[in-house]
Length: 141
Image 1 (cartoon, rainbow, N blue to C red):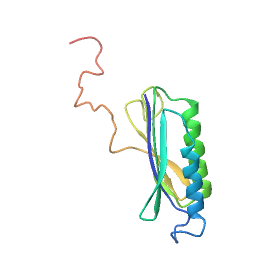
Image 2 (image 1 turned 180 degrees about the horizontal axis):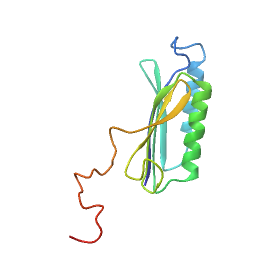
Image 3 (image 1 turned 90 degrees about the vertical axis):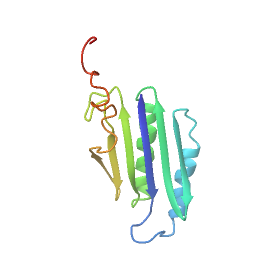
Image 4 (image 1 turned 45 degrees about the vertical axis):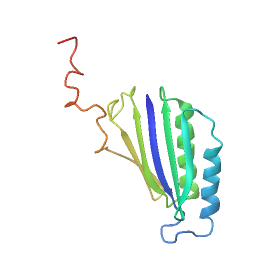
């Protein structure tokens, strides 16, 4: 299973709420994700109290280039158009052998136009040892 949960506050400028182009740029992002037809991805941009928020959920049987490229391209567009945006991307791939492993979420933080990977203190490990103490033991007990 490959899972991504993302929320991003779309913001053009850290000092002013709208420098004049924020509405058009956020609308461009909204139109982009509204055109997606993939059954493994759902995304939208909502305006709540004058604030634009992008949310995205991906649930696929496995990590594929198709989903990751769509998400990566979307993030690049957000950073380019709305550089003061901020948010979190939670990602879990149960087949990965890379850090942080298949039993954990990888957290990417978007802040001031930069993406950085962080350790997840909240949802990882996905299957805590205290809840499944025999999961790593071979054979039956």
